Length: 343
Image 1: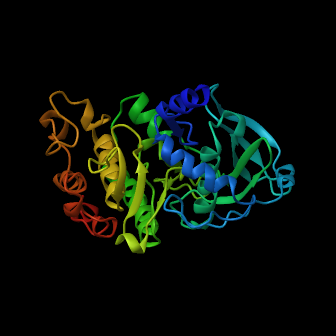
Image 2: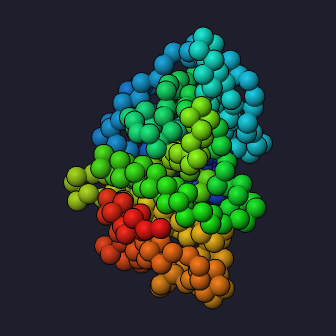
């Protein structure tokens, strides 16, 4: 009787999987049945080997470096640490070259269960495969009993978009810069989508700025980061991925994403990109407008905020924010949009 009551309590519980991003609004919600299946699979494998074939995770080789590699990267400064977050971010430098490197430590004692640990490992395996100038490069990753650690490319103005747009509420009015930022993000997305990945958490905070101070470039480069919620496109799903439970960040999630078992494609990233572009132009998301129900119809454009904005960028945003994903513009086609040739 006592065991039965305990099982009933467990079945009523829900588990929330938080992305290992500093931004805690990004979550994956897992129901008990899915959690049980995942934990069974994780517990029946040897550490360091890929998962056996399941519908939950792709077969990606997890090959961490020896934990001693961290000795080569002494910590210079702690950049991010919040009590409830499993993520701690440090600025380090290579002991021989003095190259600045970001260390992202995911503390296991702050993860809820083995499922979260597996998501952190999947982030490592996916990002380690990505090599593109508009994607933050993962140099090494490692693991011990306490943490999973990523050593990544340093961006010297990483918080630019968040500080300017979300904190200071200042839109980007320089059209040349806005075009370059948009192109950089689209190049990253086109690379991801062409290689079979969906980012699944497109938002302002995941676009980092890097200024080339030596060359004195007027316009810095944008690099996409945080692949903790990424999905792998499966050929057997007709170019889609199975999103077991709804994930992403409020205000950026595409309307076709359901509470669970959504077949999603690269179109969800294009919706998120459209919201980002909208936000860069206005310093607010469409969800901030009164009387607009998210995903229910055409995105509203308040006249006083769009009066002086190039008509082509508005058209690109409209094509990104089509409620029907089959009508949404692709990253490849978006790069050919007339906005990028206009002044």
